[in-house]
Length: 51
Image (cartoon, rainbow, N blue to C red):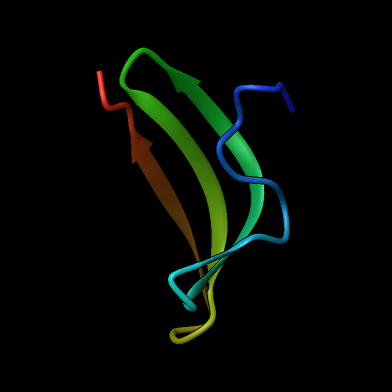
């Protein structure tokens, strides 16, 4: 994890998705693997850059 990571493993996003790990990132944002607490599935979350 770098200092610029917006989420950390274990963070819960909008009371639904639990962050597992960072998959990647670049100029457009960051992508994380997460677990959907509602559907019980692994998903990808993308946080887009505000640039």
